[in-house]
Amino acid sequence: MADAAVRGGCITLIGMPACGKSSVGVVLAKKTGRQFIDGDLLIQGQTGKLLKELIQELGDEGFRALEEEINAGIQAERAVIAPGGSIVYGERAMRRFHELGQVVYLKLSYPAIRRRLGDLTARGVSIKPGQTLRQLYDERVQLYEKYADIVVDETGMNTRQVVEAIARAVGEALPEKKAETSTGSTGLRGRKTGKRKAAAGRAESGGRTRSGRQQPQSSTGKGKRHGKRVVEAGQSSLSGSGGDGELRRQRRK
Image 1 (tube, helix red, strand yellow):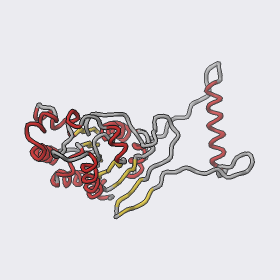
Image 2 (cartoon, one colour; image 1 turned 180 degrees about the vertical axis):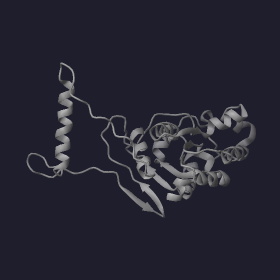
Image 3 (cartoon, helix red, strand yellow; image 1 turned 30 degrees about the horizontal axis):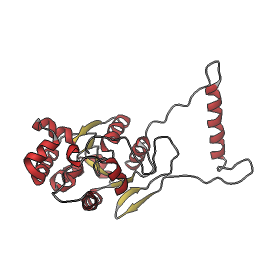
Image 4 (cartoon, one colour; image 1 turned 120 degrees about the vertical axis):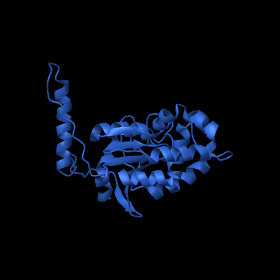
């Protein structure tokens, strides 16, 4: 994986439509000093047509062939690339992404994907006639896992947490936020800072409470599965992190 990171310094995000590739990709690019490339916008820019129009005109197989051709021709260094969800059907495109850097699969459960997706046709989702969303999900998950260097389980995570998990997995630490200083006549910031210091003190002392009991430590599990780095779902009480890891709705990804 170190070789993949060195090749072009790119990070390609793959996953089902509505898993948040664009929203995560934009923030990840900003935080790591990369450019952001949206695969769907490349297709629309080069053809002058919407995705749903291309699918209606070319059919499912024809659209996927066009998608593969355009993505296989991407030339970039230090970029975050977010291609459409159906790109995993294009072997040449996936080979190109591996040449450019690392491929990260943003994993989300089927119920979460189903809740986020609306009209598949309006979103420009490439799906065979008569195929159900469940069948499409099961079919693609195998391909996402096949091509991924890193798997990030988004369950219970918001956009910022997913970005941080990806950065850690590719070995790039994000800059830490500056601590608030105690300023202002009301002293509100000072009280907040005091609470943070108290929390930090408990963490340094092993997370013990006043009674001396050990507090449970939450963490994001990491491991390896079939030669891939896997970042498991983390527990979070931050606002905006739903139980299914729901991110803001985006147009088709």
